[in-house]
Image (tube, rainbow, N blue to C red; front, side, top):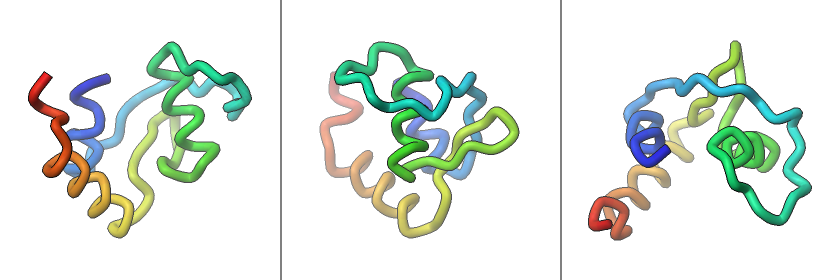
Length: 74
């Protein structure tokens, strides 16, 4: 999952198996659960079994977080 945000920020789509649009759990333990929650909260879009960043404004925010956060240090 670590490389997926970088790929999505570059405009790529990531294949997943959506977990039923349910984001009710307090713990998201798997990649698919995490992305399913992000779809519910409209941080990602799900289409044709793939997730992706839905617009340029969000893509800009993802890029900003990747560049300013310690994302690559660990």
